[in-house]
Image (cartoon, rainbow, N blue to C red; front, side, top):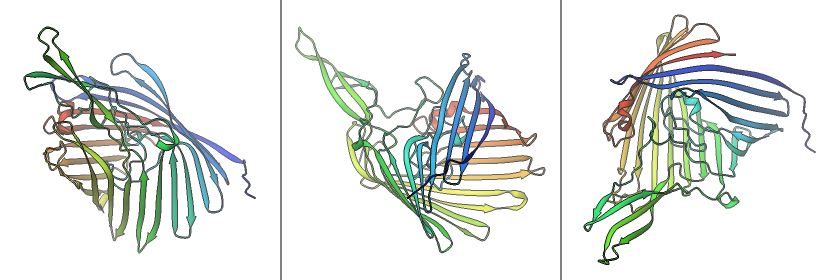
Amino acid sequence: MLGVSLQAQMEFSGFYQNWMAVRATEENDIMLIRNRVRLDGNLYGETVGGYFSVDVLNDGTNGEYDFETFLREAYVDLFFSNVEFRLGKQQVVWGKADGVFINDIVCPLDMSMFLLQDFDNIRMGLPMAKANLYLGNWMLEGLWIPKFEPWQFAEAGSDWEFTLSVPPDTVWDLIPNVIHLNDEELPENSLENSEFGLKLSTFLLGADISLLYLDGYADLPVIQVDSVTMIIDPTLEVPTQMDTYLSPIYYRSPMYGLNFSRPVFTTVIRGELGYFGDRRFSNVNMQNFTSDYFSGMMGLDFTGPLGSSISFQAIHRQIMDYKSGMVDDKTEQMATATISGSFLRETVIASVLGLADVNEDAGLGRLDISYAWSDALRISLGGFLLWGNEDTLFGQFDVNDNIYLKIKYSF
């Protein structure tokens, strides 16, 4: 009979952070003033554990200084001889790539501030049940997510509002065609619409290898034609206007993935391969097509002198059954490079990040220099540079080049 000991110890930690960003273009307006207080609690025990994380945000970007409280994670752990259970709101990380999400799609992303937030805050926790089974050198992870949650995007009119591939109003056969975008349609909250996944991991021939399967919904919606209506002139009895109603919808798309990493002397080789079934893509006429989709990443991490490190990543994405006129390109290539180093007895850490969209001649660059004033206080100064055409991911934010200052006090 399984028994659970309730003897455990609670520990608390957290931090206060102020992040201010100023636009680097002619306007030089303030893009962000955000205060964040985080409280973390860890429960340690032999057979029971737990964790919670709460954020209190004070956003004064618009001069209103509203307070918001968020429960980032809150879960309970149960430990047995070779099985672990975790129940509650939690984050699950399934990826090997840095700054790019291929197989790491279990939890949705918070893109409301896009670049102006720490990478740890982009991933959002989900209520789920997770179990790990350990058998020798193997580990099987299973998870069940009862309710699908989509990505969170910036509000309309904000600096980081993403543009949707929605056609403008047009003239069709000499009749104006007015486009209307309805609210997105989320899957109904039912057992049938829940998501589940499996991850099988092992250490083989010096390599860390994982096989992944996720039966869930695609992270981003596809735009479909919901209805078309005509306005008829009562006198002439001829149509004078056509109204096309579009709806962003979410759909199931199973993912089959492979992660691996292996050290070779002072270099680490890592990669992700993801194959996504039944993905949907739109063409210029707002027709939807179904095709499987492939995404992969290969990365190299080098250790250099004086505590420096260099990382390169190459990403390839491809629509397997491409149709002429699709809005998305048949193939996409991206590349990233990161150089970082520590100085002055590791009190100063400097890093440079570059990400390039090879297909679209677009990308971003980031410079960050942080100084540890003490063990608890760290000050960071940096900035982002974005470029590309306005119809690209990074180019649409070309006017959002910025310089930022972060002050973080940990306790």
